[in-house]
Image (cartoon, rainbow, N blue to C red; front, side, top):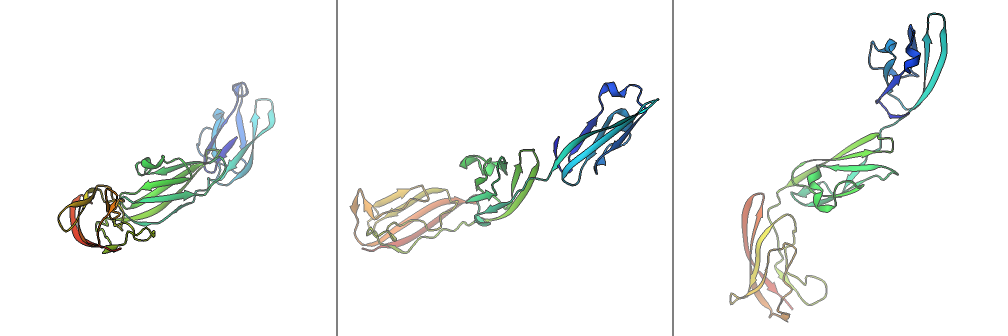
Length: 251
């Protein structure tokens, strides 16, 4: 009795009413017959291109009489409302984006491509977090309590963003500003190594985690002011990239 706009509803006459029936006279309540030649078989298929309560009636002609019209109703519902927004649409390939859909009671949500959402709890909530690997559309599909579907999409543009940047100096004095020497442009740059040495060639910091940096200490001991040298080896867009430079520790 509940269908979605442009869906097809099946009208079926009970078997006992088919006996000796000569003709079926349907009133589709504004619906459109979708299968020709079935009207006198007791089965008909109708679709509706507008919403609302539809009253369908049937009269059956028998040899000696016409049975009075029998009525039934169908409730035609609109498409579910799908509207998605993105925290940003221009990113580096592999960056994370938050997608948000309008919230409605009893809605079910699905984001795709599904593989982009796997690392962040799946893709069946009204909020989805995706690591987008390539330029293209992110799709949202919603279903309401009547199984009516709504769809929306957002185009995301990705760039390789292979270059990374670091500051020229840092001040590890505990004031909460520029206390750690680390990569500023954190993105999708899998590190093989991020290494810092002093002027004697001694390693004072080493990591392969892009978000980690040096706090100016070695085994908890603050290091002296001066120039230190870094080396970074990472991959991006299928290429191995090396970066070297120096940084000044200021206290």
